[in-house]
Image 1 (cartoon, rainbow over the protein chains, first blue to last red):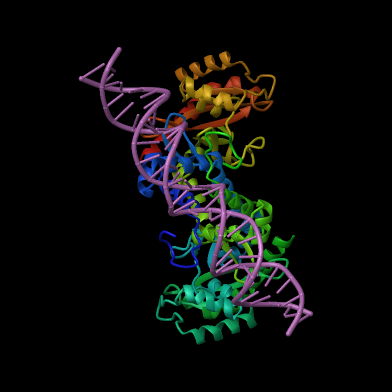
Image 2 (tube, protein in one colour):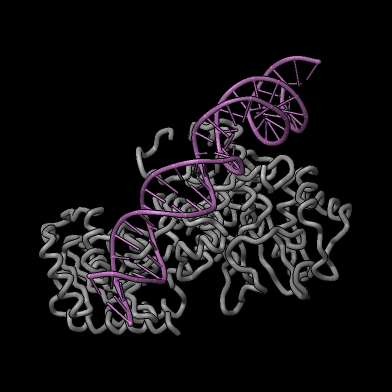
Length: 258
Length: 258
DNA sequence: CACCGCGTTCGCACTATGTGCGAAACGGCT
DNA sequence: AGCCGTTTCGCACATAGTGCGAACGCGGTG
């Protein structure tokens, strides 16, 4: 055993290297040469070429004729598409979000829970009601300070929540962010009872968000539908918004099973 | 040496296994359990778990709390996005295609050359002028029977073309498809001279397509802009179409460099 | 033409690296 | 308790992976 972890020691070296190569090439807009990769990973030529050959064979990497640079290949595209598909942002689902957006006059979000991450699968907004903050389609770390983050945590049992908190210490984002585990625990229980999660200025100042759970055919909570509005408007509109997200989440769930 | 290739012998076994796992998981809409993966690959438990641990650590795979299934993780998303970015289908570029579509009243395509593959980066169409055939956004094998495929081959030297033909024997798709290497060679020369490629019913019956090359700042041909129309209309409109794709390709090239 | 510089492949010797097997620790469920 | 299935651990073996240096191929250059 050379280095790595002293005990346990998962981590197949050559596998890690291959994965790292993919990331390197992905991060380089115009690709990388074998030499550059070898150098950045501190590997010998021989080894590098064999790793690259493996990636090339499986079409994870491609290279232009003539050029000596490696770029991402078709298999990466396939994987990305497969993932996109798994995020269920299909046309019928988008229509639901659009209807929600039109009904409440605010940006509507579909998020999908993936391990400890939350994937924003789709955002339906408009010039009049633009998406807020830096929230964009793609993966992001889950946070207990967002309405859908709460929903995700609420879908777990105590042990699951504990495991999450071990890895993600509850950082305070705004003055209203919860940092106390007991308080969070209570709030999750209430969310489990109501099947709706609310967040007011815990994630971003001036903003509030309300989310309802999307379920798989088997009943598992797999994601959330949410809308975000100005915090000052929230109290007056909450009943209406709640009905809208509940309906939207239900419709999305139905579209999934169908 | 166990099996695999008798000589030479590229192919890092554990790397291949890791990549194969990614594909397996990607192909399974709801993910796979460790046992299923082990079984499908014919591997021992121990080994499988170590490979999975590696993928999990680097966030190529994720798993829901509670669930024992592995699903694609955030790094796959990142790679897919990086690739998308490399395909240059940015907003300004799309605007160019939209303008082309409006100008010629036909679907407009942006393709990017990637090794021996062609990636359809974007299609701009409309209800009145829908995209044709099964051509969709994503990777596909290059073919000398498409206008952009010809353009890609024309961007290579003789050796490069030869290498391509070794792997992709020129199959006849329609009655008009070229199958003779010498004829193809001549046509490629003409394309190099004109800097435009035309295809009439060589790929799909009743359809014609005209494409112009997109270039990188360095002058390399990196892709193509094209429009496809009914074959019977082509002759009468060809001058107009040619001007449109030339202008579009130029504009896209400029957007890339800028 | 002989001489580089660069990218790529080859051969080889060494042992670290990856492997399978079996046992054991978990965790849920009845 | 007992009985799943899942996951971790420990160990012994040799395969699979590694680095090094040399050879090959090629395009450009004085």
